Length: 545
Ligand SMILES: CC(=O)N[C@H]1[C@@H](OP(=O)(O)O)O[C@H](CO)[C@@H](O)[C@@H]1O
Ligand SMILES: [Mg+2]
Image (cartoon, rainbow, N blue to C red; front, side, top):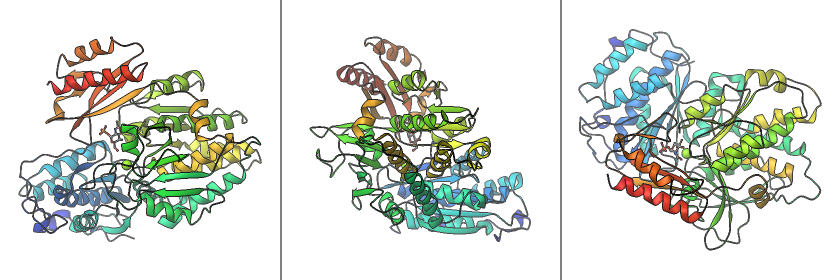
């Protein structure tokens, strides 16, 4: 039971320790890093992200809000301190809602308002929110918090603890975890039937389902599958925590060679680096066979096969989505059901993948705006909803009806049993690099595929490029809902269209990032040269502004 404060909220003064004020904002090195009272921050695609020096007061205020949310819901709320694939000097904070999903949109607004208030306004802003949403009796209110491996993490964990303490909501420090592990803990705390709410419970669920499904998988006689994998950990939390998981899955099942274990986080390595630069990460070479990368907080996974001269064949989130969807659809063929099946992508999905999904899998992919919450919300409309961002973040979600028809079915039918188990290997709460890796390995073994087979047998990516263009103010860029057309600054879209028309089978768009102070350029065309030219011409359009 939590010890949530249960009296009238406004009977307590809102006390902010000076080190957590904008005025002082003491950083992890014990130095003051004052924030101008009028400097603005926004709750972006994945919460607040910035240089770690700026985050102390933000985490404190966000943690207070997480406590309030916990009280309003009378449930456990999560607070994850990470800046994922961003540089080691950055950090970030996001709030996780009771089902383990992203914070509700109206609360994102509260978060932005609270963080943007001045030191003088903060106590009043807190009061106003309290009056609006506080529940006076919330015995189950709790905030669970975790950090990634960044140097600033421990200090920010202390700021979080202090923020949650404003109204004495119960606080649990879970130390260094991956982002998906924290999401999973939140869900299990609120729905104990879903799983044990502990780090060990998470490992057991994944490992047990993986091993059982391994036994129910018949590797074809002429198999090219190998259980050897070279794993780029981005020098992040993926290394220690995946090792913990592998304590329960021995080398007969998976033979992992770890690379990039303890160096500078995300520097020249990691899923984001490999996806965007499309070259080998640090410490890999062309003799390596099947390779994969996690990002800094291990919620993204991509695979790659070194070719020559530092280059790679990339198997990104789209390839993972199609692989998992193919497996699930093949199992469904052996069962009579009317379960609905959907695949969700964003504008960054490779055009070939969307065509393949439509033509070969017979599913029209749904395209939604960037950001996991958009994909997740679209996916839960289906009984089986596969969603992946091209960058390797994604999962599969399953409905109540799936529970009824598949999970609670005691049939001996092998396909039903496989679906039961794959749905447990996959972390349906949120995209999870560990769970996705286990699922991919099971499916590759099922089809007897090497990484080359996987790359060649489904579809071939059209050449594509992503360019990050630093800008002073990304808020001047406004797009349509599906993000492929620029509405502002006016006139720019016409310039983009004129460039796209110069190349055959091309597609390109410009969109402001929600996590970095950059504008992203994306381009596809028939050849690598044309793709590069098209991408650079859009980059120049942005630079000329
Ligand atoms: C093109 C791209 O990869 N964008 C990423 C990136 O968002 P941006 O808003 O594009 O910066 O970070 C998000 C959070 O990790 C992730 O959900 C998203 O897919
Ligand atoms: Mg991440």
